[in-house]
Image (tube, rainbow over all chains, first blue to last red; front, side, top):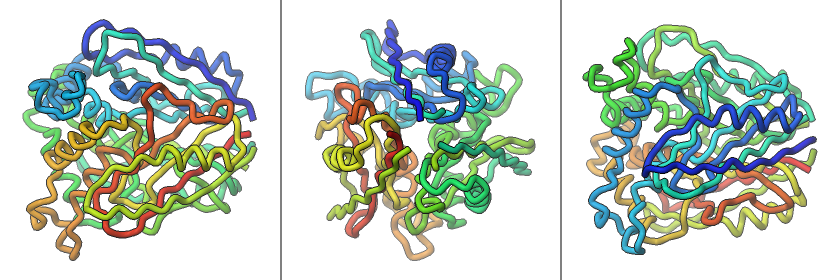
Length: 139
Length: 139
Length: 139
């Protein structure tokens, strides 16, 4: 069994943004030399997500509107977590809807994806450097 | 390390439906010959889910009502994604709540499940053929 | 390839609670002797979650308020599932938001975590014994 590990550094300027990281994950897979196995991609921070969906800008704005409706940023004082001096409680909630991680099948040396699947980093509390972990095991 | 891959084809007639795919996943596991490892089951399409819960029809209708409340299909024009000519933006949202994939432990040649765990395909934009990927690695 | 399996028994007294199970998962990993691989941690019951987030009590109360708003326990008769004699339909819904499982990279014999990542058991229908499964594969 082989294993491979790589960190991707993210630095999203605004509070919230979705970034397509499929090319970086594919590059890590090539680097690993693994042909058959599983590829885990996870946010290493708890106010960010890694998820798989469509690379369509209208949909990305729909996600943002929807998450803001399900777990609004304001009023900041409405969350107990923010009494610790933070203002990012909503980001901890949004991240649970979108998920921490994806596990992707590796087949024939490629990410085994359906026609529209792309991997995204979802930042819900940006403005500082954060990491995404890519861990691949297989042969 | 062994690996095994199988696609399940789904063709759900209405817009939304939940289908128990546990027998197909068990059959793939038997076919694989793998006794110890991990089994990934994921939707290959981005308006569908694979998740684990109870096979109880009342609960399935509760899920449908609830998802429709969290991310209603109508008004179709309320989503930016639908300006691309689609009417399935809600399905992309519902799928995030229910999840893309499950990872199941394989122990002694069986899916290592608690008493009520069953695997479901969740279709949120049906009426056409879609695929589920089963990828198993282990020994 | 090595594999290791351990069940953690949970017994949460009230209806809902979040329990940090990171020490138990770390102990299972040490026991396994696995240095490189993947660690799956999942609820074996369908009204409970395993998820990764912050160990901050204010946030945990925010999660509880938020989940109760998204999928309220009352009115119990508002869910079809509860006509089977159960009163836990809301728990099946809450668990979908928080997730069934996490997959954690194992690197150098440790859980490969970002600075604040901790593993939690989320109980949404407590008062009885339930199990969490830890399955680790690797070398």
